[in-house]
Image 1 (cartoon, rainbow, N blue to C red):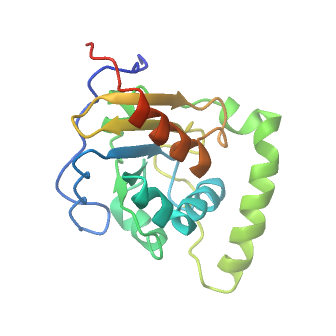
Image 2 (image 1 turned 90 degrees about the vertical axis):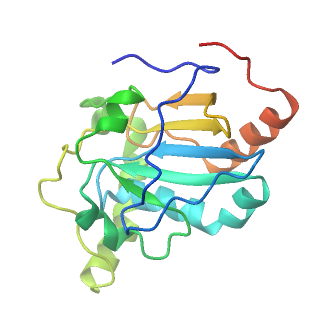
Amino acid sequence: MSRLRTGTTAPPLPATADASGTPLPPVPADGLTHLQFRRFAGCPICNLHLRSFAVRHPQLREAGVREVAVFHSPADELRPYADGLPFPLLADPEQRLYRAYGVERGARALLDPRVWPSIVRGLARSVPLVLRGRERPPASRPLGGRLGLPADFLLTADGRIAAAHYGTHAADHWSVDQVLALAAEHRTAPVPQRD
């Protein structure tokens, strides 16, 4: 797969609906979309990461950033995890968007020692919720497997890539602070126009 570069036109997102059937919210006129590619529905690392974005969602909206997360799980597996998240989750079980954006998978997703603390934190959050029946456990054999790597893209309102990050392990993703900093940087330095 080829990786996308800053300044190029991003592959289009589906305009129809998210995993719950709700249409995607529009991008603010001069706003940005933070498109993050996650792993599978119920992934403890992904759940922990998305909750950090949910808590600070008002700051992201104030900065003109629309948040969208993509999973390689079917919509019916993804729906239970969308509860309490103020932004859409896209189901991409055929991994069309993953291929279009050059998002990879590999054993390094879980074998890299830098991911292990995030695995422990994610499990420490998810296991008690699953045991109390407040969260559904992930599928024992998630569609697309467990070896997906995350990726982050900041897209302009006209569909260009303002910034891109391809993760080297399952917890190598942008934080809310990084997204806010990139959005602020983009406002002062427009993306070069090239294809």
